[in-house]
Image 1 (cartoon, one colour):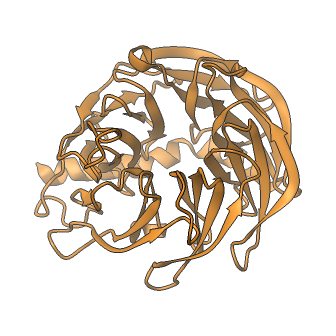
Image 2 (spheres, rainbow, N blue to C red; image 1 turned 90 degrees about the horizontal axis):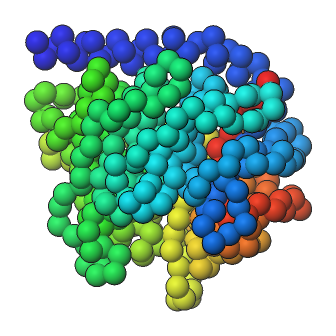
Length: 399
């Protein structure tokens, strides 16, 4: 029976991309022309922002051109576009009144039309992502420390939640920031049989089993059940690290965990020797030597080439550039590049891998950098685009 369930789940993972093949081919044609839409999530409370802003981005020139307000919606602090390019989803971060919103996306104009909106079933959602089939969205609620799964209908609307689990474990030592569990990031494993949650309050990357048939979450299965699963158990970090976001190397061999509270990156072997528990083998600062002022690390991303890794520093207001050792996966800090603004909460590498766009939340701008393909170094292109309180950016091929 177990084998049958596993086979069905595996077939679903394979079938998902095939069901989206037609829309994907359309996106690929647009991508070849280098034309993309970019959507920026913002904070609207106590700012001049109206919601989600749309832009056009040309990968040939690195030009970012404003379209305007794509959708008026409160505090869309994280936005993601479905792989079919037809729908955009956002979390609306508003304490106990927080919501999750689904929008229809018009790929020619960049306009967004609200499809439906549901309670987030937790406080202050800060991250949203998809499972590998594109049939579910995962939501991480920061303040309440729980993660929720919502199914996606064929019309793009969100359905009633199929799972709602609160992270549990020993709290970290930071009394102000780690007084409870704080789910800050959630993504699926490569095989779609697990999800991983970076919990800032617990100093752990928690793992849950995921049933793609029913959209449910469970405690991690044992090694005997899934002998080839990636990251079968939680990853423990040094006390007070405060894991915020995570990046995986191609194939999931290495896991890079950004610690917000201590501005570090912890590198794990995804598959260890102790019942597949992830094993940390490096912990490195994202700050330049001698810097001792306040800093909160925010975003982490691996370059498509796998040669470089980037993180953002709020306080130091830089992008840290790391070289990734070819064989071992270890990191070497090579530069800290000023972002040209204040509080770079997020940055995004464009689909071509040639540009990095840094979103400076408190200076209300996006600064475009060219990426050196040989060194990973960042050089400002001279473009500084104004947008109120930017906190997330995502791309989709334009038509």
